[in-house]
Image (tube, rainbow, N blue to C red; front, side, top):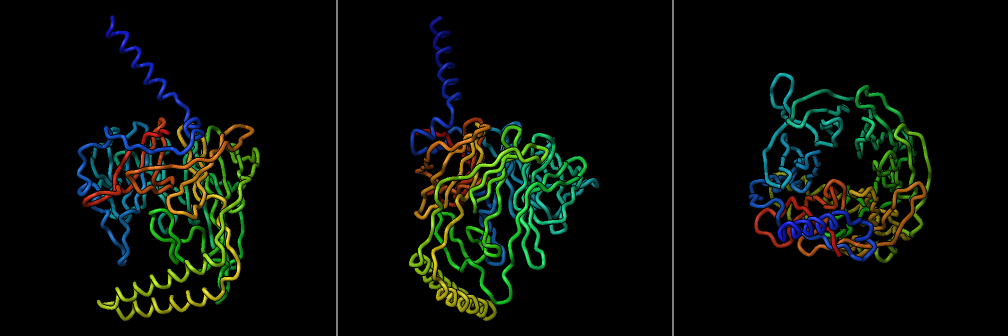
Length: 422
């Protein structure tokens, strides 16, 4: 009897912990991400993630990985520029590598990353011809959908449709938009769009060339700005919450709620101020970027393509020095950097931090009268956090993530499950 009572008490405690609302954790202050030591045990990470050392044209691409969670809790990891995916069981144990097998039974030599899961199948990102490949959980090809534009984000909706953040280049404008694509028919409906004038001739866009430390994620360089260097804006971000599609506009702070059929339901707006970079800070950042590029030029002073690469770097240095003289005004960041949905259907809006590892976020409570409830931050002692939906996915109150271990011998990348606590 005593053993039976103890079992009931333990079950009650477990149920109480699992039933704890994430919003209650957020409200209590900094959120500690604690690695679950029972998860992903005994994996040989040097073998499992040996592609971490991959490079392309001399640039490391090993961290360009993302994860998707299957209905049974298993994890599939995308490996950039590889023709296979890495699968882990629900307890984080390495399972296998697999690719896409065509109708002829042959393994495809090339494919895009998995973008999402719909109708118990995977769908991929678009190739250069606009093809979205659909295949089952074992990699068997099913069909191809076709889009005639480029995409930045794609998510599955509960009505068997896919929401897409797309963009196209017109003669004098950039067009950013959100479309809903029917998985069965390939029919598409544009529900939101925005046009931005293109930079012309030798005129410089509003953004200048600089590098900015953002946590431990590396540097924002010439082609990886916090927002589009071409258009001066950060594209919209989308999330599926309940029976609504949420579109959030980083540059304006607008939050638009649509029904799943694409009908606008309501509008709201973020009311906190965006961070900004002063003229002095910009100049300091730009000078450091110039010095860093000079050092890089010395690094490539030998080798087969040294002369050609050196000329390229010298051209960029001239542009960066010219841009340095053009810095006259402060620049505002977009109001938020990343939007991530947690497993309680809250939306976390992460701001662009000026200090390293700030990781501050506001929590959007999804209701008909949605509102923000305070500010908090993520803290982790063991890992260098990359805060983005492709690297962190909530499930049942946990965060499943691809993160780099601070003190690691060999490959530092890990598949980790975090508990959230204060």
